Length: 475
Image (cartoon, rainbow, N blue to C red; front, side, top):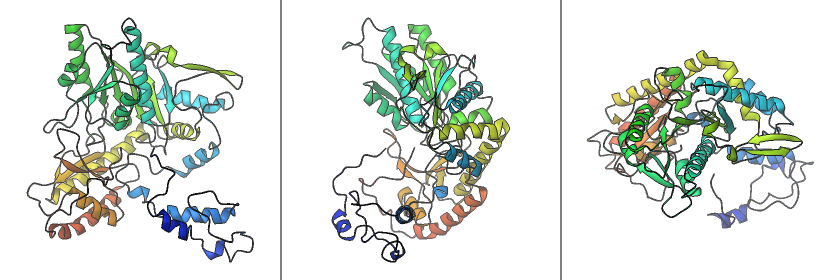
């Protein structure tokens, strides 16, 4: 999450003069409102505010947020059925960590873990271990911690020491949470650079970066940069060959934040999960293609030895023994209930229908964009329902940042960003097709894009973008 400093924000001096504006209906004209002046922005009000007035103040400010359904940058679920929202409201006061207090919520979590273990072909689903998290970022941190502890245990005779610095191998396209993990837990990040039209990890290059200090390799089922699957089976095969030559046994974690809830339904013949013996753990985001509102993620290990027992805390909490493996402690149980509802509601065939519709929308929309002649596709949405595209060769009047800016004027949030090192010359737009982004909405998007193209083509050149201005790229 973002860090916010307590000092004055830009424009705070003006804000001190105006403070928050209040509709007279909720202030002076309200005989029971009790508000004689507008509340301050950056300090607590001196007294309470009537609930209807407080609601209206916050509601009006939030109106200026973008429309979540038109946000084609985010992977996060922006629509659920009313019944799911009602269940979440029923559970909004339940603390997920209080398993003695809320045993049925804990049971729903256990069932979800078992369902995912079965979905991902754990050798013995009953022996797989897992937990819910606040999202894939926490799940990845937990998987990385398990890697590091297993490596440290095997190398206890030389770790810690100067010559035994743990490292983790990954592609340069990984989600930023892996860089955070390496930074926070003092692990060297060894990244396989992008090259040419390869926008994710190269198995042979990944194996070449491994040594006796490698705690594991991360493979991504669904790169956030372009929506493509990484070749997990090829990564495992390269590591198998490495073990045959050197004796190094390097485990693999599959970051399936998105793809782990796509591939089992749409690409059942693709082998990427626990069917590969080298895959030790998998994570996914329940709040992405798991189809649940934020925030819930899942981390699973193929068996108990894959998750070192010393990392699991057994806490005598409110009178019961509670094993827990998490970075957070208290968190809401509503999202877990919503995940179980969605599993129960859709089943395999329902998930297949929803994810296939998303892929159909992505493939059709990418084709329509290509037909304009102004853009070149990097991916087509035929893996994740996500595709990336850039301006075609010979288009000099505008760039992807101009397109993103102009689409925002119509309410569409489409991120424009540059690729990681070694392909920083490539700037793209990315569209994420989620449940709720229908063929009809895709047609409306194309109508707006086509209407903007004549103006963009008349520009004398790209309008430029200050390097300090962030794009709308969200993982």
